[in-house]
View 1 (cartoon, helix red, strand yellow):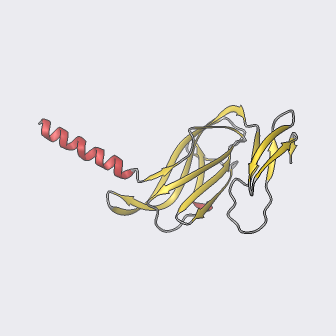
View 2 (cartoon, one colour):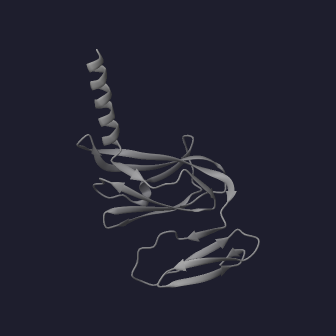
View 3 (cartoon, rainbow, N blue to C red):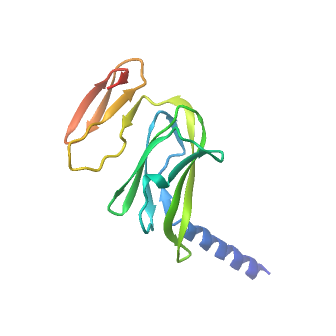
Length: 166
């Protein structure tokens, strides 16, 4: 009896570890207005697009997220701005072709996170840029006083953000 129980537990642990072939570097919590950036990694076949992304609260789709998904070689990066509505949310990535137990399958990958009562000091838009061209970035400061931030794009630069959009 013990051998059967051990074998069943061993097989269950293999199933759990192989089912987790995908990972998302999403934090457990974010402040309101915070720029969320996460990497989806693992065995991903086919391609994903921003239309495969969905945010839900409970089981209800939330349309208030600003987001994008970009592919860089064989890695995917997700950018989103946390809404100004503290709550528990779920990020769903639909139609992910991956391996589970050695079989290629299509799944809906999900991960939970929380938006807290705190407000981020600023929001960066867009959170992801993959380009060889010139580009613009906007910052929205939620602080009541000017704040300094450091940028590392083609050298180090310090920028002073006034309250509001810069």
